Image (cartoon, rainbow, N blue to C red; front, side):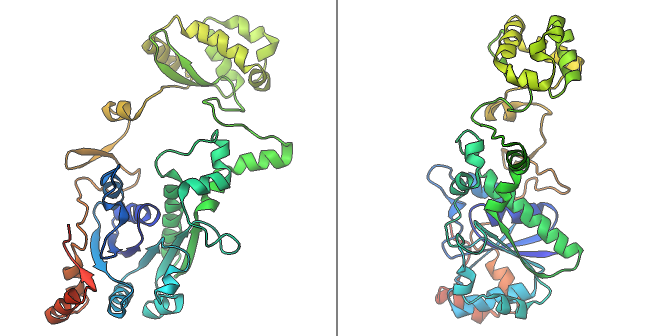
Length: 368
């Protein structure tokens, strides 16, 4: 089994570690004596910690002390992967420079998650919403922040891909994933369209700016649904299914560019029709005619839905399963330092050495 050392906190490194744990890697979470900040939040409780840390082991070490660094480097020596998302140059300040890390384990695959690339911006704090603002994502999203911690989790996924590639290709080394770069990739074809066509697509609406009708509508029973028509064939099917074949000869809606230009008029015509139909009727008719449509769900709807997504359990809590091989079903999160003693014994430390480290506050275990 591959062993991963996760030296991080909150989202970016922990979610990368969680993906690897889901795939069957052993993941040892290295925490300070105080523990990951997300263990207890006065608003979220431990929700964030539960999602990102199921199935892991926890060792609590003070890395500012020489003995703590010694333990860490022994762990590195006996591991395959290291992930960290500490502040810029924090590893260097701890004395854990690349030459120290790789002298302990030349075969290590090491991936750092940072906010910004090296250079002018590298020392800025990597707060996800700040990076959303600077990357253009927030403006493209109508000046609204993305839900949850999608920005960090996106970078986590690239971190895991990098690690899997390095292991597969047998290319040990220190790799880096910058969160702002991960965000910029999302805007890929928007950036191309601006450079080639001079077009900027405004956000802040449910409407997809370059296809129509591609937006939310409301049924007679007041429920919202999303209709997605991205080509002329689907528009033809839509018009026939709704008994609006006259629209097919209307010059305002002849092709997609025309429909985008005249979106508001088209929306009013379709909405008038949908206002006479209940949601179930709309869904059946459109799906039977191969027209993409979906109900507008909120979090409560998703949890109560049946068969829409796969779930795993944590005690009595439903958690969406990662769309990967493996499982985290019913796996617990570790207490702070829960595995400290076991790991230290595996690394060859004696009872007396461990007792001394406890007294000197180098390590902690089973702290609540």
